[in-house]
Length: 422
Image 1 (cartoon, rainbow, N blue to C red):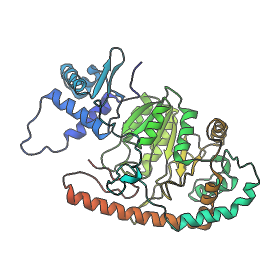
Image 2: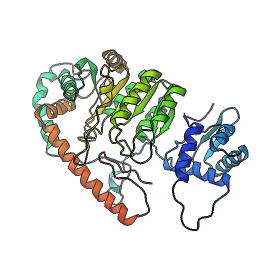
Image 3: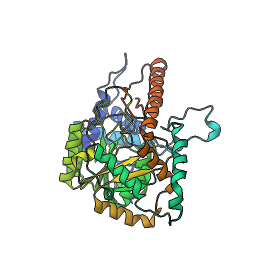
Image 4: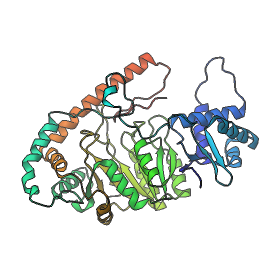
């Protein structure tokens, strides 16, 4: 059985390698042999996370044509990578990327540091901030006041509390996307939402197109469901999606599902333009691909004058192609594990029915707390505080990297919680 879980096409790999060659070399740098340059380029793409671990590489002949080099050059480069532990192969199954034994996997799900290490180590794997007090305390107090009537019920609401579903639907409607409560399911965080969607639409062996790079924990979740990931490289810098690559992948790979972060992408910070969103929805609809849009960062713009594009679901208001995932965890607090799904009513009914075999429902008290924030205006004030915290942190980090690591390359994102540095 093959050990690869995703695939990288020859044209895509050639473009990624070319982006490295376009970067200026240092003075006095000698040009390595062609096979060595190719091996080094692929190894660097794996270490940077731009090509996933366990990604199937194109056949030697196919890659040689895409790179306009001899097949011997590609074969020698692959053999070099196998010797160094960055490639594994099996007759009849092809070759896939790896990391040498004993090395940590790059771009994998990351666990927070243990509490005893917090005073001496900076955790670069956790993009989360303290709660925006006093709004957490006020929300919990408000939820406790609303709890008694619910305490007299069974407390089992697989689709979410009706009051919160209505409030979320009204918030989408206020953004110009008419939405009914029947189009909303409340989940245990965005991870719970995407896990449910993956089990419904992308079972074992199904292809899921994903941005490369993307949110490491979501990628790991998808791998564990048995899906085959098809990475689509992001455009350079903060330019968002490369639509030519997306159209090619959707047309040729015909993935059952695609997962994207349009608003302040994790981890690059890119904000997809409105035209990119419209074109991606059209391409997904033509390919019969369910497009899952993670908009957990959509309220975290940090600079004045940022004009937020229309939501991706705005180009598919009925929800027949686009499924939207939102959450309180990024914009408010990671400890508030409340997420939601917006989709067509029949999709919501299927997700709710499948939930009987998963977690049954989301905690009532936390739903009441989020509903209190939405209904009192506390959410807007808390998110405003969160933006100020994130802006100060971003500016401090940018200044420190420029001062201490002047040769490192990055573009300053205008929102989100991450800085993508080469």
